[in-house]
Image (cartoon, rainbow, N blue to C red; front, side):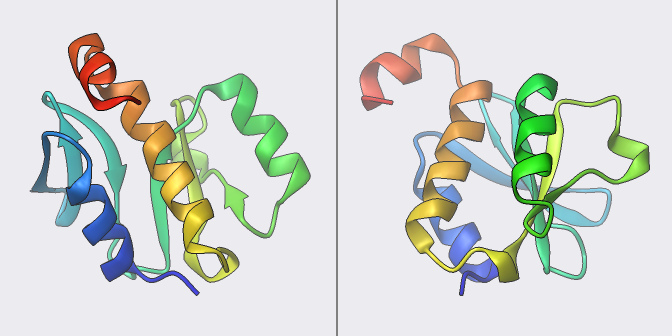
Length: 112
């Protein structure tokens, strides 16, 4: 099972990632753009996700992915950490969200 500490460690290992508190929770940013939040209860994370992909994720795995009503118009999706049994899946999700926020210069130099 994946926990918030593992998420934090991996997020901070991504190039030029910084942690910054906002809305009383940890957020993670690259080049000033947020790509990850860990809400207060630490049972889930929020990551960037294009809306057209988000609907497919939720339909395929509703026990893992969802969107709170107040985030329906955003390009974010929530991921239940208890549903992530494989740390590699967590790393893939975080890398994908990081790529969506990272500037092209980082994508080229990081091999992402």
